Amino acid sequence: ADPRLRTLVTLGSPFKAEAHRDWLRDIDIVCVRNVAYDPKQADALRRMGKTVWLYASGPTPPYPTPVIDFPGLAARIIPWMCWKLRAPGFLYWSVNFWTKDPYRDPMNTPWGQHGNGLLFYPGPDGPVPSIRLALLRDGVDDYDYLSLLADEVARVSGAPNPSQDVRDRLAEARAALAIDKRLVASAGTYTQDPERLLAEGARLAELI
Image 1 (cartoon, one colour):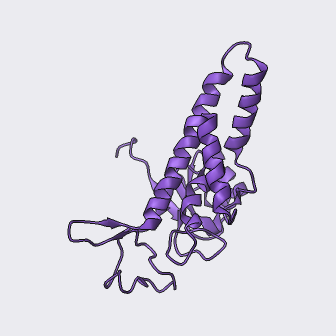
Image 2: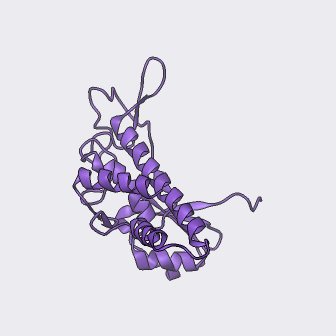
């Protein structure tokens, strides 16, 4: 009815993009569950004109998700992973799902993970954000750093006759934007060292 409205579907299992070409004809955004993400299939979707997003719903390690049972790094690394995998959006199935008192019993789904779909708690004056939500927010801030740095690289790259120092900094910035595989290698492979992540975030700020 309105071509400005973008349509989205999720794919939760391994798939072959070409096999779904007709089915995906009117879909703009294909949101792939992180456990099913395949770089080759994601590229095939992009060649079909689709935007590819990521989503997390009940994955088990090594795939990250912002639940209580996982280290805090699993929440913060998700936006870095989105950048690395060229997924400009991230879907999480719920932020306020509870069936009983979530402070006393956060096991709210049959998936054996505490706080799944629960990033806000109920409070007397409104929603109470979780530490996991704050970590995910910090990861989004990191994503913004990556975006700002990419803009700066594009701007500086157009300058005539750059000095050697500028060329060196541009090379360093481009390497940072590629995200070292020791930080994020795939949808299920990423550093377990929070200090490495914090150091890389600081480096992005310095490069900007």
